[in-house]
Amino acid sequence: MPNTGKIIFFVPPAIHMLDMSGPTQAFLAAGQLLHGYPIEYCSFREEVVDSTGLRLSRLALYREVAVEAGDYVFLPGYSSSVLRSGADAEAWQGVYSWLRELAGVDGVRLCSICSGSFILARAGLLDGLSCTTHWSLIPLMKQLFPAVRVREDVLFTHEGNIYTSAGICSGIDLALHLLEVAHGPLLAHKVAHELVVYVRRSDRHTQESVYLNYRNHLHRGIHELQDWLIGNLDKKTTIDELAARVNMSTRNLTRIFKLQTGISINHYITLLRLELAHTLRYSTGITMREIASRCGFANERQLQRILKTSAA
Image (cartoon, rainbow, N blue to C red):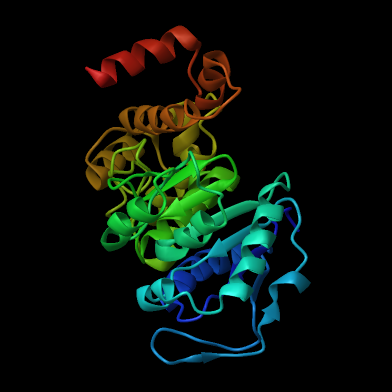
């Protein structure tokens, strides 16, 4: 079994279920592909009522959950009326203390969805950091926590081991991003395809994704080849070798690929390599030479030249 870590959801009273069920489904799909990602649920009481009146029972108490390096702790959003009420103040203080402890554990990721960012803010974990939340709660976040740099124009933020995402469905976007970081774009694409959603990018990417573009066709062989290319960009290969991989002649593959996708194989490979290069450039501790190698470019000069041309 791969070292995927656990997915732990802290379930607040009046939870918005989509904030939890969306990422849950993403990690469930990933876990089925990887044979990993066990999912656990906890709260400060054994039974919680969600924002629609649905009862969730037999929840583990959060202090009894073992959280280790590699695990993700998700804080879903909850009803704004409960958020403002100040109810269960003593119980919440224990949660804030627990989260501060977890924030100091190397390899544990804390992830909020929608109004779940207020839990991190009240724990003092967002001071001086960028964060986002549901658009309707941004003024309240700014008012209550002036030390937090609230962003209004992004799907999610990431600083250190803390992630925040905007409203409702952006929890799925965050989950797909985490899966891409951990396992690469092909796995994220497969999960998105299973969920019938688009892979949207962070503030550092455009909303378009080459991993989903050029896939609006039904040719199984071309889909298989596209999947292989995404996972093997560092390999040197020829059109003849690619054709043999899908049992086609070189001429037939060239013709069918252009017919099904609208672009040539070489252009598609270049777009994939550029997308991966753009992603790796936001990673710390990696040189342009390493990026060029991992993306399949001959050297960093070729990478720089193509990056410059693509930006023009």
